[in-house]
Length: 368
Image (cartoon, helix red, strand yellow):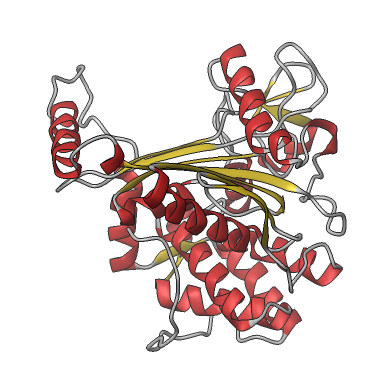
């Protein structure tokens, strides 16, 4: 359970992930980039997409399912657009490349859209939507999930995934407004996190094939996730998949490979990022001030009885960053055991015995 969690500081977790990835075969610069992003995922509380995924990533790397020496490149390009081929590299590397390219293009064109194909799972969507914020820009990220857990509305065959969307909008004195959501009631990574902590899922996350609530995450394979908003969530999952997958020549529908079960086959994951330079539309400071004012109006507005606080999208993740930076990132005992077993397998120091030490690496990670 959460109260039994072991707390690990960010630098130690980052260094552990980096070491394991290098032992698995990633070049040092690539391992550092991926580790930084994975650790940031855990720091913001996206525990279904951080270090919990490390055993799965390593399994795919060692099985040959991920290319550790990818030639990530632009295959088609216009002033405000590009299509990136990830050459089956780690998704974090592909999307970092795509995000940086989109930011550079948006400086020139005002708006830039960069899609990717031949990528892999890249962690939480907000990591990439937030990257443009550090440059005074708005970021929107779309992706096809790496396993189908959602049938079409009224159907039984799982032809769609959680297909997330994230939007990050900079403010002035307030924290950025950051929406990060799956098109299902919950992301499948949260199901995995519940299983790692030995917790049951809330009713309404999943149903079994008879339509009954499914609460045991260990039985997740017996059912499927539910879309947000009923048929509207199904429609949103579909169109996001078309934009992030089909448009880029990436997998969609039956072509999506379940990377939870198949560690060898290339996933051909599709993703896309849209970057908007605020300065192309408005005075940047005026815009940021308007966001601040709206955030405060929402937060300070009249609340329903029993409601202690009105939250803005991204505020709870921001608070987790502060809490976890101070107190350490919680790691469930079962996950710690899995990570230590993984470290032994690849010949790395165990996380349970690793101690914090000054980190002199140059790590490229999203700004808070």
